[in-house]
Amino acid sequence: MKSLIHLALAMTTLLALSTAPLAVAKAQTLKPVAVVSVASIKENLADVAYVTRAAGMADYGDTAKFFAGALTAGIDKERPIGMYVVPQAGEFHGIAFLPLEPNGLTTILKVHKEQLGEPKDAGNGILEIGNSKTVFVKEQAGWAFVAEGKEYLTGLPQDPMALLGDLPKKYNVAGKLMVQNIPDELRRMAIDEMKLGMERFLDSPAARQGNIDRDQARQLTKAYLDKIEKLITESDELLLGLGVDETAKHAVLDIGFSAKDGTSLAKSMALQAEAKTNFAGFALPEASVMLSIVSKATPEDLQQIGPTLKAARDQWAKQIDDSPDIPGDKRDAIKAALGQLVDVIQKTIETGAIDGGGALVLLPKSVSFVGGGSVASGADVEKLLKTIADLGKDIPNFPQLKLNTGSLGDMKLSRLTAPLSDRHGDARELLGETLEIIVAIGPKSVIISGGKEADALLKKVVDRSAQERNKAVSPLELKVSLLPILKFYKSVDDNPLVNSLLGTLERSGNDRVMLTNEAAPRSSTTRLEIQEGVIKAIGEGVKGALSRFNRG
Figure (cartoon, rainbow, N blue to C red):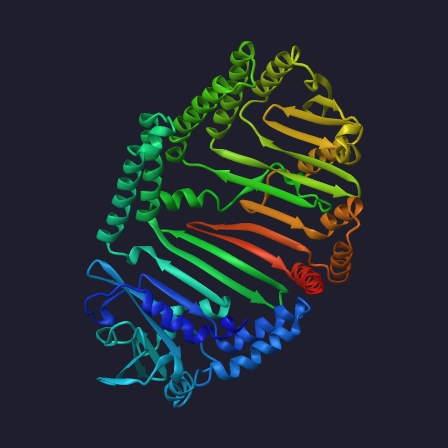
């Protein structure tokens, strides 16, 4: 906690010390390649207080506020802290800036004299500070600018806050990389270094010991590096931001990415901007975990699918041939089934659209799951199932697979069953006396359901999906609800700590952790959101762990 409070001073010195030196250049002629933003001390302390209060650890927030008063003396608590990075002479240079109260720099140097030493006059209003390693500081227009060399403290911006844009308002801590401001020669150097590093690996003893097909590996590596080169060449900005919002009662981590206008990367990203699904039924309110994925690909993206899957197929086939656990007379049949599976995957991907998802439903002493999505040809999946059924006939204890046991709408149902004996213990209690997995195959879709409520769950997903066809959704949604997971856990292990966490969540609600993606015509933002109830549960868990530790 003390380190968090000391962020204001440490950030300005450490970031400045870590950057590589550059030749002198006037700031007004340079475009930053990156900026780092730290919200005002007042805002950060308020959010620390909220999080510690929500976690049931308000004393820690009070302690932070107490230490902050001394450690941040001289710093303006209302304005953000930041840093910008500029390229020069083939390297990068960072300048940090710190908002000052009246006579703030004098106060900071006095309070931290033991750590920073006696300042020395370096001329032109610049001070040299530090003991074992020095930095240079210049005060201008209410800001302290910090750099690793005094030559970098010329031509400074009058209003460095303008470089941060809205980052301090949206996030507690954030960074933005402006890729297009990186000089072409540096981007080219990064690409060449990656290619050289991969060539060195492929020619290394480690690669030879791995017995990999180097020609095939080079082909795949080239495709991979071409994709990386495209990202470096055609991307525009990359954002990373961490924020706490008491009003919204959550904490978020955002990763944003945008492409340069008019590029093939921008066209590819634009395809995701209006995502729609035919499998909205997976978004079950009672689901402990829910996943939805919708994606479209350009012809350029699809060109890499064939070589990648061929390499995977060859690798899997080799593992089958080399496995001592697979009978020799079954290897060809298994490889044939594997080939059919890869063909189904390849043909589906080559349609240019991925649409599907899944859900896990946990109830007291009950586990059920469902998942699936679109396929290029349901008939091909039926052939694959028949191959698997034929393959398993002569294999002892192979689960029973019955084909075409019924229908649900336009979907044909097949059932795989496997008895669970007493030796399966908990699995039998949670899944039932017989594990049953239902495979529902439509003309262009496959859904697999299993567990105690397999039939009911499958029907619910199919019906809901039919009612909400072509529904607008985010390209990615992953939602984890902690309350039903803890209720399930309690049914199999009556742990006092779990009971305490349950009580906390039942009182507060807001029990989700969510990963979502929002797409725009040439940008994409992926957000990890942790709701307040989860923060409270984490705090309860930490207090419980500390209590047990102290007793021990």
